Length: 563
Image (cartoon, rainbow, N blue to C red; front, side):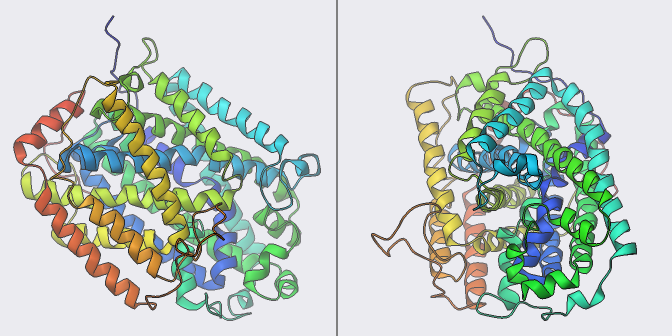
């Protein structure tokens, strides 16, 4: 019997916008400002501004690609169209891992915030990891995400639309209330604007971007792209949703960081003695904004914030589980995963097998990374690796398809595309050797799954490996590893592994001095960009892959979109 693999185009512009905004405003606003301040002090504001510039640039790149090919799981498929199966498999796996880790991250955030209440205190251990009871609660919450996704994208969209309005309103309300009632300008200079010490100064600003939850918090604009195959008039609605959601998210997050620093009780800061000691200040790590509001005499805000601690992460986790299943759907459409991942239910037209497997993988991530801070670093590194494929694909399409219909065109693409690739690699590098080495282990597992699918014929599409189109991939991943190992970020080995038996896997020892490392990384990135462009598939092969990967007719606007 022929199984359906088609999706229903039920989403309009507002639903696409709110899907992206719902992913951007999640647990990042609850914990991002606190984590960033504890790492970089008031200079965390610079971290947010730099990260916002990086993410806005990447959003513009994705907006053009999304206006060209509005398909389910788009970010996992553009590199496949431009460079072939091997490169597409790698970036598709990065896309999937990033999206699949968001649901457990958001669940962890909800549980951590609620654990500040006496009746939920036992959900989290003293070291910040989930207890046995906490893991059970996490499994139940993730099962709720699965249920809503299986009902169908229209129901998911309606749920997310309502939730997102609340998610945006609460942080904006919190910003306004704290700005009026508890603004201490002296906090910005109490211990100096920059955190002093070996890991302080501008190095702390850079580190905070990746491991402080900033990149993770600002991510999510691509959700409109992942749902492109279910959006009506996608060539117009997708790029608009991407750009507008990013602008709104940046404005909210920068304001949140400013108000968190300003609203902290000066007595609490004096008790801590430094920004880096904020983690020792009672319940602040569990529920940062609730503690700040209580100290400011706004205890009634605690009820609103704890309620939002359920709504914001849950909304983000819901929409990201949706997008993760669509990425798995796209990987199956490309021939990387078993064909069953592309089967959609007869009534609701959702990829049910992909949804269930994504739920299971999310549960696995709860085990080795049972705390918000530990899982965010790996998710952020996978996220930026996913984003790094888009500028490469854009460069290839601008060369080979300059006149292809685009509802949006990024200006000065010949400059901004390679620049976007460079800054993506900066963010990956700032995550540190420990995070990068862990992500490479996950990458090997992904290629093993792709290999099993191919060897045992679990997908009827046996695509060519296109090794020539991916000849830049191995130098890229290995080169990033070498630079991360020799750099000064993230000293240590693979997360969670005991590496006392050898020092060979302990990197991040600053063999490359600060700023010299960034220069080396810039030259390396531009060399990889040039090699990738020279390796792109010929136009005929691109056409064939695009025809195979676009399962529904795409709708293009006649003129570029003005934003």
